[in-house]
Length: 218
Image (cartoon, rainbow, N blue to C red):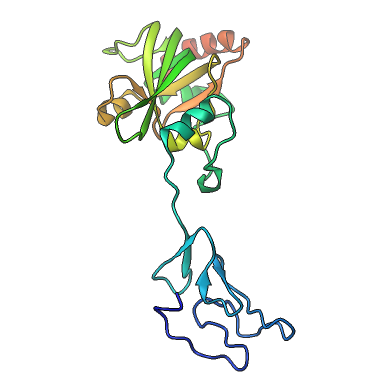
C-alpha cells in the first residue's frame, strides 16, 4: 500500500491518509488508528492475511482462502474445519419442519451418509454416498427411490459445515431436483433451496401428517 499511494502527513503523526481511520495518534507510541486489515505505526501496510484493494474505504481486504476437497471431507469426518473464518451464515441447516417447507420442495427423503469422496479434478464438489431409507415426496417424473444415490455438496460449503454432515448419520433432506439437473452432476445436489435436518425418530409420524396435509399444497 505504501508503494502505490502517496502519503500525506497529518501533523506530527504522519498517519496514512487511506490506511488510517483517524488523524490523531497515540502521543506516547505514535500509533495511528488503523482501518480493518491495516497495520503499521502509521497504518501504511496490510496486515497478515490481507491484501491491498482499490477501495479507499476498505484499503485492505482478507485474502480469499481456497477450500480443498480434503478440508471438506475432514469436516464430514467431524474434524475441526480450517476455513471457518471465511464462512457466512448458513441457510441450509434448518431447525424446523413445517407444511410450507414440505410443499415448496420437489422431494423429501430420509437417508444415511455412508461414504464420501472428492469429485472431479478441480475438487469443487464432494460426492457423498447416501443410502435413501424413505421417500416421503417426489415429483411425478422423478426416479428417486430407496437405495443408494449420490449427493453432491460444494467443498467450500462442507468445510464451513454448511450443511453440517457426519458419516453414518441419518438426515431428512428437502430439495429441488432442477438444482441437480442444472449442475450436470449425476445425482442429487445440495443447492440454495436445499434443507437438511438431522433425523429424529419422532419425525416419521409428523411427516406422515404433513403428507396428508400436503394434498392441499398450492
